[in-house]
Length: 123
Length: 223
Image (cartoon, rainbow over all chains, first blue to last red; front, side):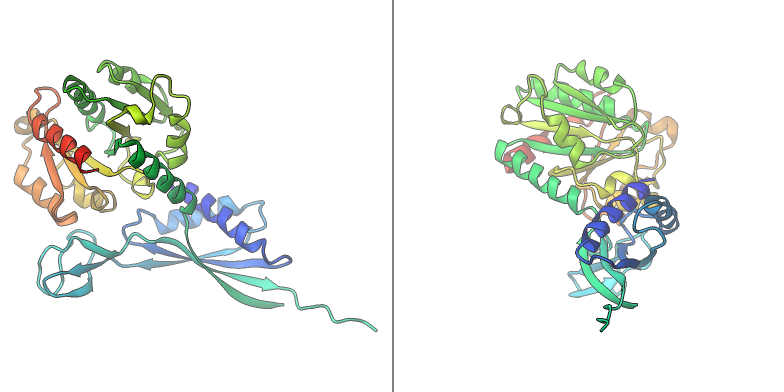
């Protein structure tokens, strides 16, 4: 259950990034999370609601892009996605592949901001 | 109202990762080998570590330990029996150690300076999920599993076992009564972390401790 710590870290990071855009409201936060990052999507969504409550981020949506595991197979010279997380083998030749190329990501990809239109000067 | 997307592309645990990198640089310049020991509760981390500390001291090495638990200083007291300096970290509900806790507990540690150490062990909170995300500045992450837990532990917790540099199987003195399938356990470890170094040990009888201690010495010299 470290999703609450993770949600709190996202709130901190996004609040800091959003402070460069005064007046803007954060509509959505988009994450990239690898299948090996030990993060449970539902649990993170639940904790996101708790962590943003009473902050300027309250009501912002959390979009989570889950990334599959990709290993590099030295024998085949390719990067390949493995099926599941039970066996780190090249799907083409079946050899064990220790070189992990994707799967540990735990990143904030982007934020979507809603900004008020510039107020027109009144004569 | 207009909307726009601002790219951030930053690690969620950036603060932890930056602090861990600072710690790693400090450990390297002090010449201390730091290991992060992770397992489920009840694997026997503390008994294994107590024996490791005792045997390293008998070999003339300077070793110390930071030990994480939600509550109590029971483990620190058990480890202190080895004669090595030990400091307890109580997380009060948090299910993992992070770099900031390590940094804080290195300060004001009476009688311990990094420069005087060869080995620093960090015994993480018993948990096979959350500690995998938190870099503590260690050089070697060790995942432990006991023969009483079942051979499929690595398959159940791939995130952690895949992030480990070495695996220690504990309580091998109980392997037979538990019907432990050794070949299967080794195979499962290798499926999740191909090529991982594996040590089979009993802290009770001392079986298998020698290769583990030799590995530590070899790794300390490799720094």
